[in-house]
Length: 107
Image (tube, rainbow, N blue to C red; front, side, top):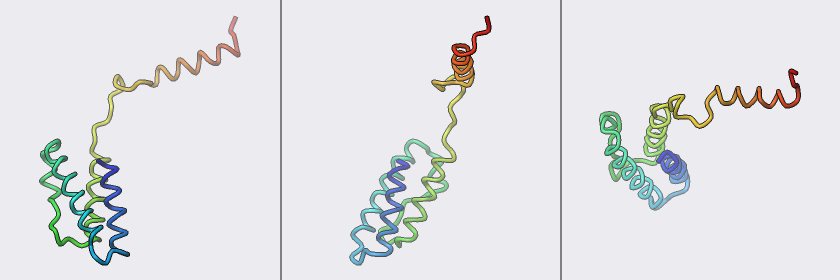
């Protein structure tokens, strides 16, 4: 969904410069509202901070709102725990020291 929001932001920038008939802008607003609706189902507190866009929203506003929502998702996602990661720091250290032992045997 972050990728879609970034694409919406990019397309809204295009609409700001080149879209005379507002076709691209209408698509951007539709995409933003669909992503917003899906995210509000998954993250209920999101509705406190972000609202759906109106049909006559300007391209600059769509661009800023989509960037803000993408940034919110990137900065507020839960971090994986050490046990959840495939390669933990202990594994990396053991692999590095094991590799060194091949070239520098202690015995």
